Length: 71
Image 1 (tube, rainbow, N blue to C red):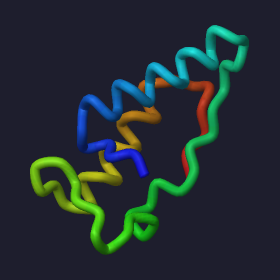
Image 2 (image 1 turned 180 degrees about the vertical axis):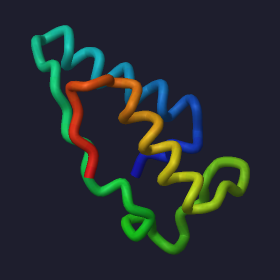
Image 3 (image 1 turned 60 degrees about the horizontal axis):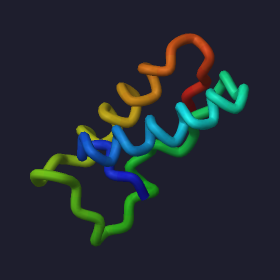
């Protein structure tokens, strides 16, 4: 699980998706950002709450513009 409350983890994930864009993939589907996918022992950066995780997940996806689907 990628901790999207961690700016470095979010940056890394963006870099991976940008590599795909360089290969010609321009649309992404972001699914399963729900906090129910986090394990009970999963710790978010700086003690963030699960709702902060979801907000950061959505913010991360939104940075890719119109060529996305978020569920």
